Length: 148
Image 1 (cartoon, rainbow, N blue to C red):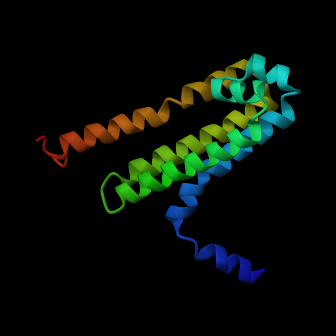
Image 2: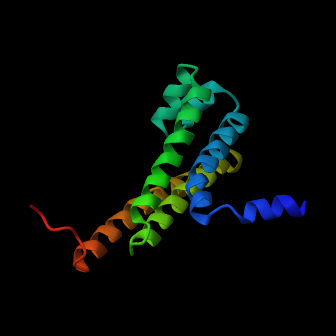
């Protein structure tokens, strides 16, 4: 058991953060598929049009793998680009907030409360607010690249 714990300790924090959205998407869609009660319910109540499309066309496993890969790739690119800059905390915040949002979205099929679902949808605007704050910080700090 100590070997497993030691192995996990050697994984860089940035890699774990990049993996968080992929794991959160897996959790979200697993909860959705398990607790929704069927494809008809998902088609009627799921917020995401992409998930509804995947369910309607019976391509959920492929869609899930694609989304996990896309989230991991996007997170890894953000971390790589922002590494060593003052924007890295903003990138981490966006990545983790997207992850938290997916976990809460998956739990909405357990909670089944419209207020809870609306709060989860409202929280999805958080990463946009953080990204705009990072842009404003970049522009006001004078670190923005000069135009040509």
